[in-house]
Image 1 (cartoon, rainbow, N blue to C red):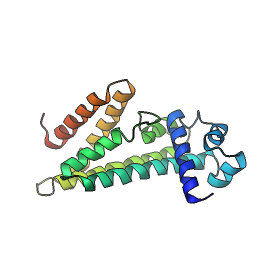
Image 2: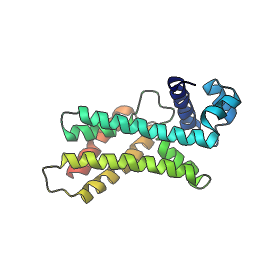
Image 3: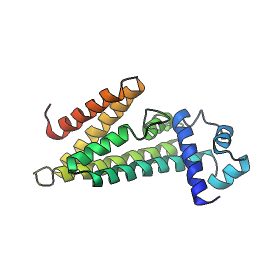
Image 4: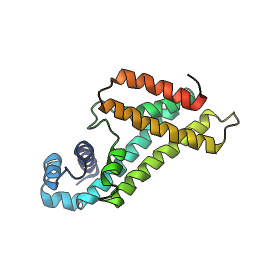
Length: 192
């Protein structure tokens, strides 16, 4: 299997796991989605756990790449943080689930597969650390400590999880988008 075909197959597996969760996705489902025979899936990716782990890592890498690139393209560091938050909330038009794949994985797997839950937690930590770096850039000229930036990143990540939950409850993207704008401003600048 060449690299491009493998990447496409991995994205299909990631989206299937993201939509259905680990337990509700069978190897047969994966074979059908990837259009591969059973032996080919095992040969290319290993078992279900290995494929799930690689899907989590792929998702984390995709999020990190997009938020870093969005931050660099932004006119100001504040706009960069806002761009990162918006990408995390709205990663792309047809998401398999409104709930973040990493959060969904942690909640599903924390007791039945702690090893996979740990991979998801590591992805969440990477994203939070990147937000912290970006927030530090916002306050580079001010007397804001790294510890404060860490706290802001934690608060923003918690709010992102809540805003994504609102999307899954049927709130409009427009309302969630407005709430994201207000949330970032309020967390970083402590105002309305």
